Image (spheres, rainbow, N blue to C red):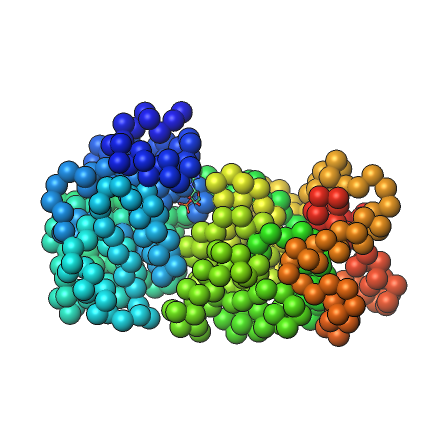
Length: 454
Ligand code: AMP
């Protein structure tokens, strides 16, 4: 199947080419024809499936006809980062169409937003809070909106935005096309969908499973051992770009600081930062200036950075949905990625739920509960070095040390030694010997992949 079947206008086909999209993803195959026909959509799709282009492309096509300089499409997204991401996708895909869009969110001045909108835009991509501010101030109106998109509706619900969404709906014409996308379908979203969608086409793409191209490993570790485990892994693994998730803003800032002091090009993305600093962190990560980004769930929504090789759940998320969203940051658009989850005794319940969702157990390091998987299940035998893995590991450490932007040589060794914490093995009654054996069990293969020495 190819994009030519949709018969897009050459100006839109040019945008698809610029983005190097060759074949439509499954959600694009299903959603694009229905949106072009003017149908409402109930899209159950997780992040990383190509859902943004699935609604942006047909909307651009429909906007080519009709008046310019009026807000004809409203896209509502839960976070600033996601709003920026959608706006940037519109700009890339619609470069030749002359259709203009703006991202509208809080934390930055209102005036530039008002000026830009008044100068004439056809698409507004907005977060609910700031959008309502503008609507209350009557700085612009939405009476000419033909298409409404609610993206990541489940996340908007999680963040308490549903009342705002219902208020925004009152400013919109009832005669419009409505597209609602959500990775999951809690009851509240189902009710909203019933209220606002008219005979929708249901498009469902593996909505509840984290992306299959991501290898999953579970590390059994208690709180006090997490930082040293992380540093160990980072020293032994070839990581291109790594996204680390913590449960709180404070933990994200503090861990990024520790990694930075240990010599890693690391920064944090969390809600305590000003919008300017958040954007700086995100742009730096996108450009590769930062190899490691430590983020909270909310700040990380909408991160679309190609080439994230590793996602590390430094703290297990509270919900399986959050897990799906986190893991969706790697393995995007069918690329492979690796995800490491640090879990302690208290996380057992949620791990069971996550594995139910995955449909299989994650590969274990140090075992977790009674179901200890063989490491080979996670990293196929063919990926392991033929013999003497210890030597390979040493060699690779040197290489990966450089590629991760860490200090190498003596400085690195002393930095590591200084930063040693509690052992991360769960059952470390046996003392130092057990500890070092366990550490030695994590190795890297000749391609730089982490593997376990059983
Ligand atoms: P999304 O689910 O919209 O966040 O998209 C995930 C990633 O897939 C983004 O980096 C898109 O640029 C990329 N993408 C979207 N559609 C395609 C396609 N047809 N072929 C290749 N990559 C795509």
